[in-house]
Length: 234
Ligand SMILES: Nc1ncnc2c1ncn2[C@@H]1O[C@H](COP(=O)(O)OP(=O)(O)OP(=O)(O)O)[C@@H](O)[C@H]1O
Image (cartoon, rainbow, N blue to C red):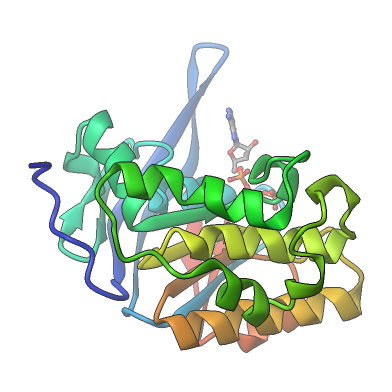
């Protein structure tokens, strides 16, 4: 129907020769150059590096939110750069979840936790997914059962970030991509979110890629990719 292979558990992410240029005042600015990396299916990886080095740009390319100037990005067997917008949208709805840095960008502020998870499942369901995770066990696993009926805008920062993670996992992704998931949290709450990110990824068989400045979070991941001036460095 779509030309996209069906979802079947965790999928690896491989990019080769990625280059990305932004056009600023009519001139190209190279944000990433010749980046190649592999994250195995079910593994966790951190993308680290100084401010302005190209981490978020890389994340948007891996998530199919921007198209690279050159190079390829594979999620499982699917080359994102070869998909038209409709197929890319379907892939993002059914296999690839993104958690933005600000949890409110992922959530309905006036919806309860349950509302948010049900809402998150609308897109994958509309694309034919019938195997989505049950909501109550997911809220339980993420530690939000007690506030399941509470409005999102009345949750604490840590609860909101956990809800954003739960909403992403509710879509039953094979890959979860997240930008600074702990940056707006104190160290104790951040550590709890980092724990959940790693443990739920493992228990639910999801490949996780996180951009982070948080060394504690990065150290919990299987692999760390360091970016400097738009290039991967050892
Ligand atoms: N939309 C854009 N238009 C033009 N230039 C951009 C755009 N987004 C990023 N850049 C530039 O690309 C380079 C890489 O930016 P990017 O946001 O990917 O870095 P980063 O490592 O994620 O930074 P930070 O840690 O501060 O978020 C920077 O020079 C930045 O100014």
